[in-house]
Picture: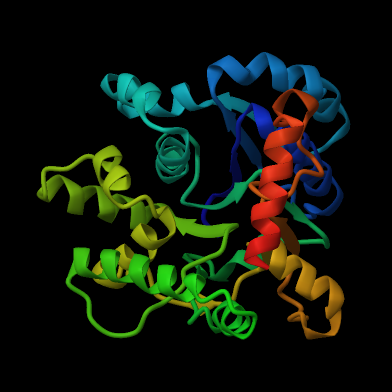
Length: 300
């Protein structure tokens, strides 16, 4: 198989979530797939304070490396460091994930967010159809769409179709609306290389493109469909993902309705609503949390 790695982009507020993710990698990474964690330079010392990387490296057979976002940008785009620092965090983290291959030794990678963690043993073969062909997460999104409609959250489908149409139009594609996620995502370097060529031809940088349409998942999926960068071998999501608090509450109440298959190897509890692993220094005031709970209750 081609060189494959695990890559996580994080920042200070998610340090405890990264610790959980690392613990799960150590517990379940049977093939010792290399793991790389990238954070802003300013957050390095905090991560070293919370996570004992030296002990991990000495007691674990696999590779675990802490690198900086700046080192990824500077690898091939040193003039774009100013852009990185000026870009909003929710956009810059998408770009970092999409260009991580420029620094790291890989032909394909699993792009992880901090709120993911593994729940069972996994192998490199879980991510590949054959030696040179990684799977592509691609499906119709019906499970989340149907549940959101059933529970009255109609905006979920509306936003899904809106986001899909934006990137489809970018590549002139008509037809079905696909979901290419959720994260973690199995990404081929060849697809990102084709997107770079596409953007270059349109005289646009990846920073400009992602600022205009901040959806790295759709940029990847539609690029693959447009340029056929790799053989398309679609699969369902490989992690259970709880996008919303109401979704997690529903499945907690009805666990028998959750998809249970051999290919599910982890869970994602999205950090924007889950406070359970938010460090004290990142927690909002009581008033802010109270207002957030009120809004969540109204939405339910």
